[in-house]
Length: 380
View 1: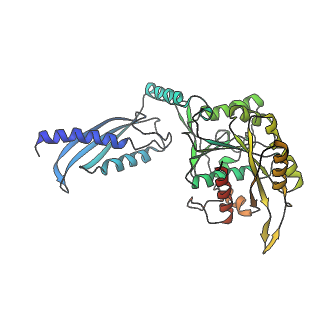
View 2: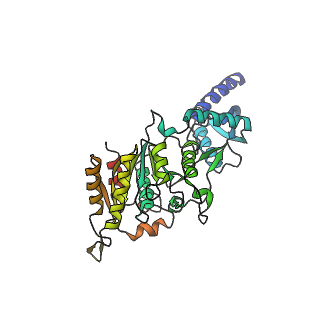
């Protein structure tokens, strides 16, 4: 093959490699690196020798990162390497030239992404995200652990899942998922932390686990607006909100910002819990949100082979019955989660209890209970 033929083939290789790189996504933004303008040039130079009967090329990919020192740089480079060396028509030796976007280019990119997202993306008419606000009338019923394990169950089913920690004063989500770092900031747009297959955002990622939050109502509402509008969520299938106990400012803010949300009422079996949980569900009479169902946590369990009801029985069904009667629509009992010390023990290590150490769904009855709840929530 003469030099003219190799030069012509090099142009073909450059074109083909650019197309192959369109399948490589930025791990944080979830978009093609070519669509984001991160690939500024691809240059192929022919080598003298053939490899396995195919012409060989040195291919230089010029990559501009959205942020200098991006922690996922190596992931992007590895994926570019895979896309280039697997090119079937030639033997490719990849070289990645890494730099950072200019402030002007980054600002233009962020502006475009914000325009596409149109402020709160979950209120768009074409939004397909199912939104569930996990609520309770009082604290201590396991609302946050239910949120974390339900999110992990959805993710294990292949659903793109996100969680907003809307319990500003009592944030628990970072600890339950083992997250201690702050989200990345791309030109003023926050990138949620992904852990155990779930994208997460919480004020606890900024405030620190040992710092109290002393905010009045308007600032609480503003924090929710920022979590919705200033975060790149990349169109999740499922959005779960871990709500604060009761029916205060944050409940009103969620109802106003996300009128298409459905409430999941969490209760424990005893009288003092289910009566308050029912009142939380009845708040939907005055709000634009609906109640999707009830989850009973800390239900009866077996101790030494004997069924034991540490917190009584029947609370979840009673909440279901009360809400069905008062709201005039079916509010089913979606599931009963047995009292299980492993939920706390595993959760305190920073892993939802439905997952094993490898991050896959465990084969425990607890995991199956959450899968059953998740599947019923997807049914209309």
